[in-house]
Amino acid sequence: MGLEYDFDIVEIAPDEVDPEHGMSAVTGHKAVRASFRNARTVQALHSASPKIRRIFVESGFSLEPKGGDLPHGLYLPEDAEDRERILKRLFANIRNMGVQGEYCGDFDFWQFLDDVKTARPQAKVARDVPNQTPQPKPKQSAVSKPKRRSLQWRIGVALGLAVIVIAILRYLAAMGATP
Image (cartoon, rainbow, N blue to C red):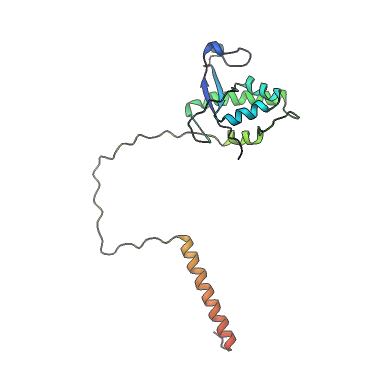
């Protein structure tokens, strides 16, 4: 099974910000880092070449896993702006520094890009409020609707009938009768 490249945006303390490698309050944005959720993904990034690690760190990624509880492919909607800013910086660093010929180990850039491209913000969960409006009772009709049959059942019946018709036609042809 491949690695999961989901990451969360985590706020870091102002005293932990390295002005060379991270965002600071000077830029007008809160100090945040992108942290991969999966420890195996962080381990794969650690095993990549120092240049690859530097590109990620200078873009705003952490080399420490901070496991979030969101499912694969989802992120918090409030992280969208910070996420976009970090990813733009990452792609600019990749373009400027280049990664061609660098050892990536188990870290798969193509899968990372695919996971980033398909990631969606988590939908807001509506509160479960019971419906207080009275609902009319369903009327019991003398003729009840038959249950819908599944498509597979219908195809099976059609194939069975076709086989029976073909068998009857062959039998009649063998006996010399024509339909």
